[in-house]
Structures are given as C-alpha cells and as structure tokens.
Amino acid sequence: MSDVELAEVESFSLDHTKVLAPYVRLIGVEHGPKGDAISNYDIRLVQPNEQEIPTGGLHTIEHTLAALLRTRFDGLIDISPFGCRTGFHLIAWGEPTPEVVAAAIKASLEDIAERITWEDVPGTEAVSCGNYRDHSLHSAREWARAVLDRGISLDAFDRSRIA
Image 1 (cartoon, rainbow, N blue to C red):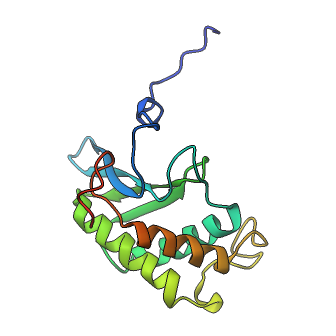
Image 2 (image 1 turned 45 degrees about the vertical axis):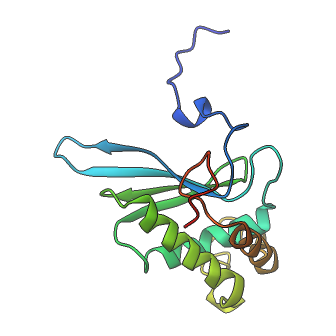
C-alpha cells in the first residue's frame, strides 16, 4: 500500500453483502459551524453485487427524481447515482426522517413507472445534459416498477419495515 493518506468513507465500510435492497438508510447528519444540519441518505434500489441499473435507465431516474423530489419535501440539495449503479446518495438540508424520504421516493417512483412521459423528463437535450443520448424512459419505468414491487424498507438489514 502506498503512503497516500485516504479518509475513511462510511459507504465503503458498509457490508454490502448483508444489506437487503430496496431500502432508505440514513448514513449520517453533519452539522455546520452555524448549526445547520445536512442529512446524507443511502437510497438503495437494487441488491448490491447482484443487480445494477443500466446507465440509460439510471440516468433517466436520476433526472426525474431530481425534479420530482423537490416537489415532495423541502431541503433537497442533491440526489446522485452511486457509481455501482445500485442506487443514489440523497443529500438534504435539515433532518428529514427516513419515513418522509421513503414516502417521497416511493411516490416519485410511482410517477416514473406510471405517469411520466418522455416530455416530462428534464435534461434530455445537449444544452441541459452532459450525456443526453444515454437516457431510457422504458428502462427507468421497468426498474421503478421492480423496486415498487419489492417495496422500500426503512431498514437496510430487515425487510419487515416496508414504507
């Protein structure tokens, strides 16, 4: 190992072989120097090391969630996909509860699965997206339905608390 100093990253110490997706998991809350709270959530849609959402579908889910979630609860800063393509980090001001986050995710996935049209998906042109050709509403719908069929747990290790 080199002599490069690396910080410990919480998500890399999570045992990905023990979690049971789909789930919403509060990773932690950071407090700024003025007391502001920022919450970091693990929104895991598919089982790590068993499935991954293809980039076109994940990209469309990302863009659509970014718009839908901002209408469902206050304080969303960002929702960004994991590089492993199994879900998203959700960053929000304050301390929204897992129940609030899960309800917003569920309602948004229901919209993606059933109501969103191609014209509704934001950022699908070259001027508004850095990889606008890599979108698939068809794939996004299929994956949203699959997540909803399994249910979204409020516990990363226990499927008995479905939101």
